[in-house]
Image (cartoon, rainbow, N blue to C red):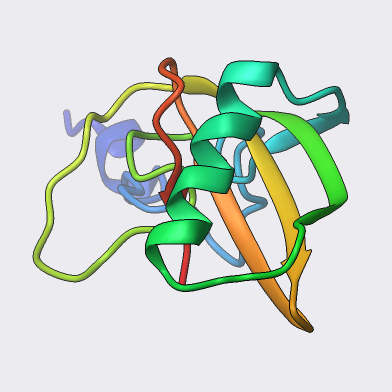
Amino acid sequence: MTDDAATTRPPFRTTTPGPISPSPTSTPSAAPTEVSPARWAAIEADLAERGATGTPALVSAEAVTWPNGALGCAKPGQTYTQAEVAGLQVIVEVDGTTYDYRFGRTDTPKLCM
C-alpha cells in the first residue's frame, strides 16, 4: 500500500506570489503640528551656520513616526537604529531655498538632502 496523499499535495511555498503591499511602518505616518521654540532655535542656528541670511519661513511641520533612525533620510554606508522613531519633519524656506529638517527624539535637527 502506498501513501498517495504525500505525492499529490502541492509543493510548499516559501515566497508570496505576486506583489505585496508595503507594511504600515514602511512609510512614515504624519500629522500637522507646531515646532517647539527649542527646535526652531536649532533650525535657525543651523541655517546661520550654512550662511543663510534671511528670515526663515515655516512651510510645514508634521509629527512623523519614522520606520528607523535614518529619519527617512538614509545615506549609503551608514547604519541606523532599526526601530520606529517618533519625530518631526519641518520644511522651511529662506532666501528662496527650501530646507527639509528632521528631528528624532532630541532637539537636534538633521538636514535631509
